[in-house]
Image 1 (cartoon, rainbow, N blue to C red):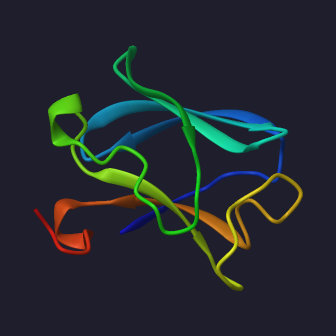
Image 2: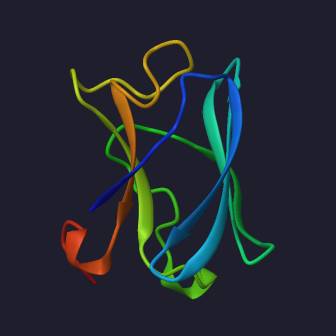
Length: 104
């Protein structure tokens, strides 16, 4: 598992290398929760996914992303939200296949 550094901002775009994949992660807060878009080499893999505590974000290998992403609440079991401590309380984690619970 790898922690991806994020800021406690309501909207941010990150460029990060994950398992030799050039990834762009867009994180944004809406009134209904925190959402994430993921692109690899300029191709959208998933868009508008609601971020929840310990819930894998990509979920399906057929989408073409190696691994998965999830948020983890380090102080409880709440879903992540802006101003709640993104990057400190709520960590964005990159999971390799071996990190999956009940690995496929």
